[in-house]
Amino acid sequence: MVSCVGRRVFPRGVVVAELSARETHQTALRMHLIQVLLNYRTMQGGGYVFALWPWLRRQPHRGSQVPAVGSYINSHPVFASFAIGAMRKRLEQGDLAHDAEDFAQWRESLAGPLGVTGDALIWDRWKPLLFAAGALVLLISPSVSAWAIVAMASLLLYNVPLYFLRVWGVRQGYRLGSGVLEILRDPRFASARRVMTFAGIWLAGALTMLGLWVTAQGSLGRGAQFLAAYVVMWLGLRFRLSASTAVLFAVVAALMIPGIR
Image 1 (cartoon, rainbow, N blue to C red):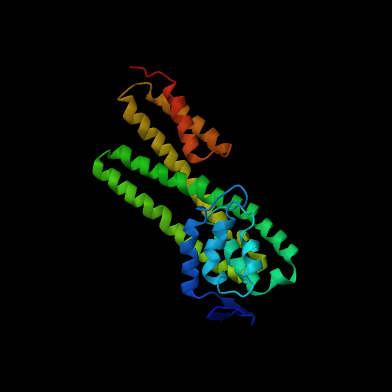
Image 2: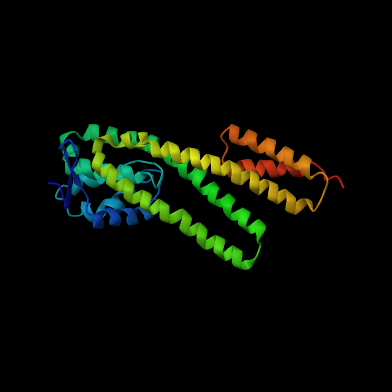
């Protein structure tokens, strides 16, 4: 039996069950602790059980469902929301009882694609982008009030969008069930990756230029330093280093060139 309160009818007449808003947000909130129980044997498995526990504890067959949910899996902690939503859908449909081996193989197949996509969007782009923006503000205004504003803004800008991404992920995972990896074909992921890459390059360039301007103090060698930094940063991004790593190498390259008075 599907334990949800909403059902949506799509244009083609296909009825898709939905989780209630309360259950969706409850799961998304519990997902913030998905790595608290991280260990070498099951990795995030315990966190998956914790996220689904309010539903699992009410199930008559939880004795077999809990080990199936909590076995070894390791994915991006935010994009795991797609797997968790899909896992609950398949458990409700009785797929585990019908074919436990197929369920286990499907579950293992989720970790890689969701991990790679989450790493590319969040670890490699969103986090360095916020880091570069905060560093740029502090170079312009290195005051205590600016530090406080940057700290609070960074916490909000990083965590609030990711919370709503978790909510959306749980919903989409539950809607798609066994076909949850189809969501990774959504063009919005590719668009977000391109936009963040473009913004990261410009922010990294601005951060490098401003940093050299502040440290050079009018040196005539500033142009040569900036050119070296720009070339190194471009090469770093060309070979798919993260924005923060590319900026670090660029600054080191610039500092190796002595200033000319």
